[in-house]
Structure formats: C-alpha cells, structure tokens
Image (cartoon, rainbow, N blue to C red; front, side, top):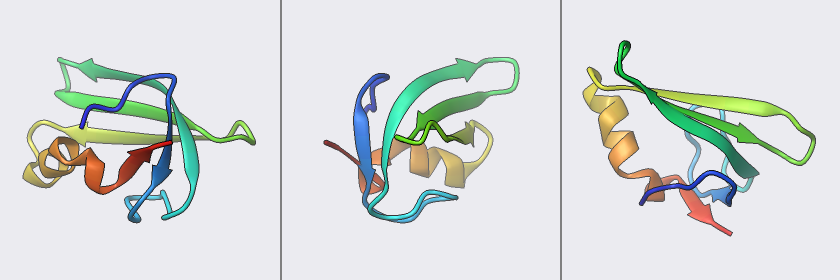
Length: 75
C-alpha cells in the first residue's frame, strides 16, 4: 500500500506513537537519500503533528514500510 499526501488514514494497529482508532492526515512524505530515510508527517484535526522515520538500513523499518496497510487504512 502506498499512502498518499493529502489523504486521511485511520490507524488500524498501534505503531510507534500512533494508537489504533486515531485519524491522521498525511501532510508530507519524502526520502532523504543522504541518510537513507523515508519520512512521513501526519497532522490531526487539532493541528498536532506526528512523524514516522523509517531507515533503509533497518530490516524492521523496511518491513513496516513495505506493509503500511497493516497499520493504516484510508478513510
């Protein structure tokens, strides 16, 4: 599943500091080649921001990144 900027997602399963049932808008995402990091910026209705950083050199991070549909569903 590829999540898209500007769409809202419900958290299906707790991940990092996101709790199941919360709704977040993906405000920005990107890749920093120098650091090998995938960055995601989420915003909720109260304008709070939360970030996810997934690193290329971490098997655990890449497993999460390849299976975001386990954690987020588009609403």
